[in-house]
Image (cartoon, rainbow, N blue to C red):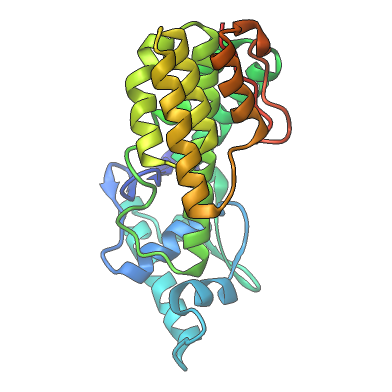
Amino acid sequence: MDDERGKVVLQLLGPLSAHLNHQSVVPTAPKQRQILVLLALNAGRVVTVQTLVEELWGDQPPRSFATTVQTYILQLRGKLAKAAGDEKWARHLLGTKHSGYQLDAQLCQTDVTEFDRLARAGRRAAEAVDPAATSELLGSALALWRGPALVDVPAGRILGAEVASLEETRLGVLERRIEADLALRRHADLLGELTMLVARHPMNENFCALHMTALYRSGRAGRALETYRRMRTVLRDELGMEPGPRLRRLQQAILAGNPDSEPPWLAPQADPDHRRYELG
C-alpha cells in the first residue's frame, strides 16, 4: 500500500513542510499544524487526546474539546486522503487508537529522524576516536537544519518543550563537530563560526573553550585570554559564578604557553559536559 502512495515527507528542522505525492499537505489552521507536528515528532507512538488538549489549550480547554480535536483530526485526514487519492490509506496513515491518534512511522519520513540517525553515527565515530568521520557525519546532520525548528508553528506547552529539546541537541552536535574539526587542525577555518557562536551564546562555556582553543592555535593568545575574561565577566554578572574548572585550566595553559597541558582530542564521554580540548 505504501509503495503505491509513497510517504508523507515532513521537514520540521526549520519552517514546517509536509508533502505527499508532490502535494503540500500542510494545514493552514494553526492548531491543525500543531497536531500534525506533534504526531510527526511521535510517529509510531500514540499521542493521547489529553496530550493534544494540553498542547492546544493548556489548562483552559473549551467545553467541546473532544469534539473539536476529533474535527481537527478528520480535517487533517481529509487533506491526506485528497493528496493520496485513497481515504482508506489516509486512515491507515493517521490512525485512531483507544486513547488518541498515531501517525504510521512506516508511511512517513521526517528530517528529525534522519538528523537523529546521523547524530548517533557521529557519536559512534567519536567513540572510535575518528574525528574525520565524526566531522563528516555530524556536519551532514547539521546541514538538515533550515533555520530554527518549527519557526512558523505556534508552540504550546508540549511542542515548546520538544522544540527546546531539538535545539539543545543541535547545539550538542555542533559542539562535537567543532571538536572534531579542531582535532583535524582546522582551527583557522573555525574562527568566524566560533566568533558568531560565542556572541549568540555568551554563557556557553563549551563554545568559549572551543573559541579560545582556535584563537590560541591561530597565534592569537591575547584574544583567547580576552575571550575568557568576557566569559568570566558575563558569568559573574549574570549568575554570580566563576567559569568551570576546564575553562580555567584552559586559561592557565594559555598563560603558561604550555600546549601539552591539555590532553589530545578524545571522544566526549557520557556526560555531555565532560569534554576535552587540546591546545597544541
